[in-house]
Amino acid sequence: MTATSNLRTTQASLALLVVLFGSFMDLLDATIVTVAAPAIAHDLGASAAEIQWTIAAYTLTLGAGLITGGRLGDQYGRKRLFMLGLAGFMLTSALCALAVDPGMLIGMRAGQGLTAGIMVPQVFGIIRASFAPAERAKAFAAYGAVQGLASVAGPLLGGLLVDADLAGLGWRTIFWINVPVSILALVLGARILPESRSASTARLDLLGAFLAAAGALLLLLPIIQTEAWGWTWTSYGLLAAGVLVLAIFLAYERRLTARGAEPVFDPALLRIRSFAAGLAASTLFFGGIGPFFLTLSVYLQYGTGRTAWATGLVILPYALGSIITSGLGVALAAKAGRTLLVTGSLTVAASQLVLWLVAKDGTDPGYWPLALALLIGGLGLGLAAPILVNVVLAGVPGRNAGAAGGVLSTVNQIGAAVGIAVLGTLFFTAATGSTAAAPALSDYSHALGTVLIVSAALYLVTALAMLALPRTEHQR
Image (cartoon, rainbow, N blue to C red):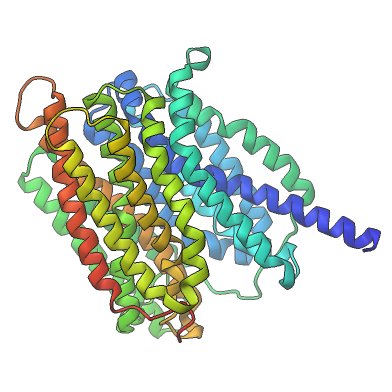
């Protein structure tokens, strides 16, 4: 190997390291806040609805920014947009850490999601530009490994930082930690990352992205605020407005498509039966994960009295289970993709029912019964999550695969926000509905059980929807 090729390999490896830093922080922030949520609520005096918004605001704005962020990188340079998104993510992380009230934290979490929506779509483009075709498989494998590491690190790091209370900062350190990592990535990225862009000059569909996000926000607002507002004419009016805005969004996207433009969402994709089923299955599957960890974390800390660190240790088997089966799922996806998806979804449903059985009597189940139930859930997640998108896209014609992939990633994030709104509201309403006093362990057990039963039913529906997907990830 020549000195020039050695240098090129080193530069590519450093470029990969930089984009993996960014991806790791994005994935970490999607999970770390759930463990810290009780501490945030206690310190800032946040209501249940405000805690839900703290998590949902991130996923909603991330979803809203993904497709537009990807097209901005295609047009103006992927390195430039990655660096811009990373700098914005660093700034909004610092502002999250400095939040003085729930409103400021929610606003900055929305900013974090938006800047992540600019940064994350550039990762794949930069990897393709940095590595020769023969080396890309290893680079994408490293990306997958980082996803697994973030799923393990999120609960543990969140619990450790909250309990360590470094310099008296408590939960704020979960955001401060992003700052030095971002600075390091920015310094390296400025020197190492290659610039690349697409030859396409398609006009950005900013209005479409805005309408989609606005419609989703109008639907989420009355659901998350149920406990504070109740169901009034204002609530129903907001729901109706959300439906109307989404209808306008679809009509506008059809007009763009008819003119030959590139919309955020091409409604014609819904005429592909397997993609429509996959969109529903994927939304339900990923929409249940965020609210599950939020409600479980609140149950463990407020209900059973565990610390944030102990909560992270309870959740750890879930992450380990997903790592155990994710490699198996990826290896067998070409032969049995749909079977793995259905099995994974049914396994997650089974884990929810096992957890309901061990927690339903209103006493602390202890570590090992909880760990067993969560390990089962992680095994199911690992079978399905890494291959779900590829199997869904296998039923989409090649010319539509790129647009369908962007839509699927976006809807997954918005689905996660909707899941937090619906199941989170169900949990907090059930926990506080039976008593005017502070909820006891039995109240939190009842609330968690309600969410688990509904969630298990949703994963059964998800498994049924998956039966309409292609048999393997290579079917066309």
